[in-house]
Figure 1 (cartoon, helix red, strand yellow):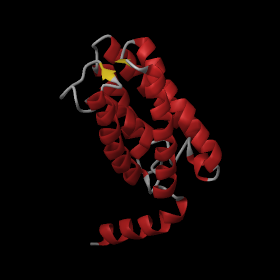
Figure 2 (spheres, helix red, strand yellow):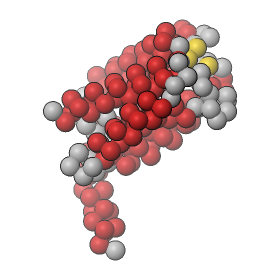
Figure 3 (cartoon, helix red, strand yellow):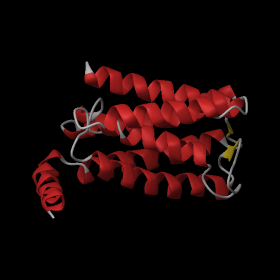
Figure 4 (tube, one colour):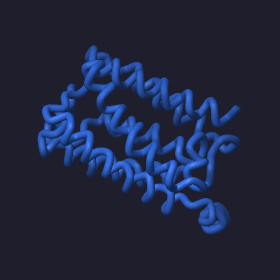
Length: 181
């Protein structure tokens, strides 16, 4: 049930952000992301690698979506703070994604080929859907989607390696040392 709620939270955040940006009403997106963060990071729901996932995704999102913006392959609505940098709302999407990788998407750890396929197809489709709903413009859609597919194949594999469940013992040991200090 927790995995279902986690996946549902991602969908709620995605729609709140994309529709909010398309209609220049961003506060529902903040509410959805804050709700997701609170739900997912309470100790009963938190995975030991969730903080690592958040850090990795924020950095990856800032870099990748800034490349899309700077290259002109993606034109973001509400492009705050700067047109050539990933907008804040895109980073919120990355935050929501980060909190799924150890929960509703944890199956990706055991199925690298299927994870790659999902990454190549699903995430670029999110940008296409975002364009249809008015949050982004893809001036060169075929090129952009192709490059996104390759990028997401790599991102999913980076996430699989960085969030490998075998690292949990090291994270739990580090958390125990930190709380004892």
